[in-house]
Structure formats: C-alpha cells, structure tokens
Image (cartoon, rainbow, N blue to C red; front, side, top):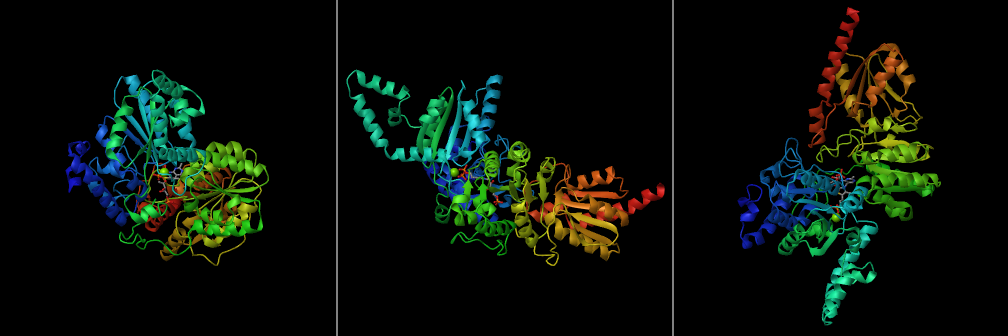
Length: 629
Ligand SMILES: Cc1ncc(C[n+]2csc(CCOP(=O)(O)OP(=O)(O)O)c2C)c(N)n1
Ligand SMILES: CC(=O)[C@@H](O)[C@H](O)COP(=O)(O)O
Ligand SMILES: [Mg+2]
C-alpha cells in the first residue's frame, strides 16, 4: 500500500510518478471506508484529493502555510501529514478532529470551522511573513460556497494591494452544502463554461498573433484594456481588474497541471487566485450523484450508500419547526423564510418546496441574512431566519443595530443550540443565551418538548418584536406530553411544585431535569420542577413566589454559565434579596471539543449523576451556612 509510505509531512515528495498515480485512488478508498464507519464530511473531501496532493508536492510543510476554509475538506491533508491512524477515532471524544487544529499538528496553520475566514487569515500570515523577512509561501484554499461569505470579499479587497506573493485557491465544485447561490456563483459558472470555449479563445489569440509585427502588441494591449473584449483573452477579469492575478480555470483532478500552475503562481509577486474545478464526491458514485446527502454523513453502507441506522425516524426539532412554519405560511403570506446556506440542516428546504417565492437562501452570509430580514420586516413581512446558534455569532451587530434597536419583528429560529457533538468546538451552540440576553428589546424562548416547540413557533411568528427561539440538534423530546399550558409572554411553567429544592431548567434540559428530580426524590428530597420557557424576560414573579418555600434554586442550561439563564436568576435573587441559595449548572468558561453529545455531557458535568451529587452537596452546605449565621 502506497499510503503506508506516508508517515509524515513531505513524504509524498519521495513517491515515484507511478506511485503518485495510484495514491489518489488509495486515498479515496481509505476515506470512503473510514468515513462509512465513523461518519464525517465525505463528499467535500473526495473532491480535493488531487488538489491536496499537488499542494503537498509543491509546498513544504510546516514552513509553508496551507489554510483550509471551513476546514471540513482537510482529511487528505491530515493523511499526508502522518495522521492516518487518527481516522479510526475521527470526530470521537479524545480522537482526531474533523477540522484543522493547530494543537493537533504543526502542519495545521489555522483553526477553522466557520466559513470564509481563510483569505483574511492568509493575509495576516503574509503580513507577518513580510514583516519578519521570511520567505515561506502562504496558500488559502476556499470553496465556491465559502466564497459567498462577506469576509471573503473584505479580504480580497485588501489582498488586491499586496506587493508580495499570496496564493488563493478557489476550489469550485459548483456546490455549497446544497446548490450554491448568487452572483459570484453565476460568474464562476460563466468561467467554467468559458473553459469550453478555450479553443475559441486560443483561436482568437493565435489568429491575432499571426498578424506580422503588430499581432503580439495587439494581444498584449487587449489583455491590458478594461474593455469587454478582454474576456476573450483573459478570463477572471473580475479578479484581474482588482489587481489579483487569475489563473485558470484548471482541472482539479489533474495533479500534473495543478503542480505546474502552483509553481507558476509561486512566481507572482502579489496576490494570485487559482480557479480549480473539482467534482464534489468524486470517485464514489452515491456521493457524486447526491453530494448534499454526503456533505456530512453518519455511518453508511459502502455498497449501497444507504445510511447505517443511527438516524431517527422521529421528528427533530428542525422538522417540527419547518412543518409548523409551513402550516402558518399557508395561511399568512407575509411569512418569509431565510437561510444562510443551511436549507437542509434547518429544515427550511420544506418551506422552499412549498413557498419558493417567499424563501431566500442568501449564501453563507449570516450578517446579510439578518439585516435582509430586518429590511423585510420594515417592509411589512414576517421574516423568519433559521440559523445555527454558532453561525449566528457572526451576526451579533446586525441583531443589535438592525433588528433590536428598531424593534423589528424578526423571528430568529436558533437551531443547533447546546452541544452539537462531533463537529466540536467551532460548532457547539453554547453562547447564544448569553449574547442574546444582553440585547435590549430581545425576547428569548426555549421549548421543553416537541409540542411546546410547535406552540412556540406559532407564538414567535405572531410576536410583534424581535424574538429568538433556541432549540437543539436532534430528535424532539417526546416526554412531559401532558404539560401543555398556553405559552404566555414572560411566563415560566411550573411542572411540579413541592418545597426545599426547585430545579429551573432551560428548554431541552427538560429530560435531564426530570431525571435529576426523580433521583433526588428517591434519595428523600422534596423537589419542584420549573420550565423556564422564557430566558428573557426573566419570570421574576415566579422566582419570588418560589423563594417563599424553597431553600435552593438549581438552574440547568446547556449554555456557558457566564451571562446565561442561571446567572440572571442569581442576579435577580441577589438584587431582590430573595434569601435563597442558587446553584448554577451549565458549561464552564471553556470550549467543548468534539465527541458524541452523551459523552460530552458527561465530561462537562451535565449528566444526572454529577448534577444530583452537586445538588445534594450544595443543599447540605446551605444548612451548614445557615447554622453558622
Ligand atoms: C459561517 C458558517 N455558516 C455556515 C456554515 C455551514 N457550512 C459548512 S460547509 C458549507 C458549504 C461550503 O461550501 P464550499 O465552500 O463550496 O465547500 P464544499 O463543501 O463545496 O467543498 C456550509 C454552508 C459554516 N461552516 N460556517
Ligand atoms: C462543516 C459544517 O459546518 C457543516 O457541514 C456542519 O457540519 C453541519 O452540521 P449538521 O450536521 O448539524 O447539519
Ligand atoms: Mg463548493
């Protein structure tokens, strides 16, 4: 096996041309086999096998820097830098991350996970190199989907004034997770198609060159003009006119021509963009035929491409959201839905199917999505933005400046809130309660189960001010079915009322809270259970009432503790002198790595055993403290 000859970075350079020819096939087989067991981002990785090989043949790691945008396509890079063994525990707790990580390898130049950061980070590396007088290469590899994100344009704008080498590789597979959207995608498509006319272009150039004496001058002049005729001889004018040399489009599955172009690019003394055409899912028919399904996949059967169990038949929170939203949209034509390239993940592809004229996929552009929604709201619509919690981080200012300041009725459906699992640190939705709570005019809700999710979606669409509904990845909880009082603004729901200890939980912590309560009761404690429902505004009346016959308030949330629900409860208890003890359970001030959600919960202490222990210890110490007083 040729792959075995690759023990560390740069080993690929020792392979013979024949071995290189076989390596791509071996890598593909390896990736398909491993990801079919562990799950992971298959299609994007299969598409960049040859591109990654070429990069590793031309550049020397770790001195040269490769920066992978999003980073979900870095598996071949991991293989070529000696991490083959890591694939058995890919994305598992304690195992290898699915994204580049500086702490994992010196060959990973920059941590990524969120889209469209690679050109900015690359430019930073270039500036540092130039100031330090070093001579290494810096290469940012960005997909056509990531190229729809605003940061990429901000960075290109700056890259255009560079006076030293910086290589940007645009990996164009004509796909984001699903179909790519927008003007840039259209422009790139034009260049792709133009490739078919390369013969024509060559013909024009050759004919001009045949004109004695003047021919070469004309060709050079045309190449320098701003006129549209230039497109005939110089593709990629958009980049060229910005001052960024455009090379391509070139076949991203031809290692030789990739290497040739990379060598050419190294000689350019400013920013150069290489437009590489690849096929998402290349080499595995089910992934080539359905790249969206194999963008991120769970375990599957290699022979058929069918999922190997694991995926639940029951509705996820995203399913409940999209079904109810479609139901409402059928009756109210002001309801519009917006996604930033996550139609499948958020469930909005259902809305797209039924109401295409009211559905907007804006590309990977969360900032734009929110301000666009604000405009829709100002224009009389009822916009609903479905966005993953971690990607909403991008649009903090838009939430404050464009939505909440003007009290515009935008409904933020905050999906993937809480731990998401195997995508890890960059994707866990652990900050939304904190960052949204600080914003005036914002209302925040979270449902305990599938029925409350449906009720809250209806409530949020009707609400006349900014509102966020946060819910987790995965199956919607089917417990506590009999507790379905109407959702009332700012009011929590008391599920069981006893005395001594009260557990106040946020949203999907319901089942864990029930479990803890059962365990406490089995151990002889009295325990009430309250569903917070609203994180903002806080139900202070309920807190004051509970303070009368409880000694200890226990809050449970899947969010960082800083600025979360628990701290707000604590702060009110202190401000209003309620005289009860408060124990906040949540995520401590740290990032949570990849792994299954159950394992992660155990690791961060969000499991029944750890919480019960803490509650009992705290409860006993309350009395000790009281006695000392
Ligand atoms: C800020 C942000 N929003 C959304 C995503 C989710 N996401 C991950 S990959 C991806 C598509 C990227 O497309 P492209 O860059 O073309 O890479 P490909 O998968 O086609 O190789 C999206 C939308 C993300 N990672 N970051
Ligand atoms: C790389 C990326 O950001 C997405 O592909 C993400 O992994 C999707 O996550 P879900 O599987 O939760 O939709
Ligand atoms: Mg793409």
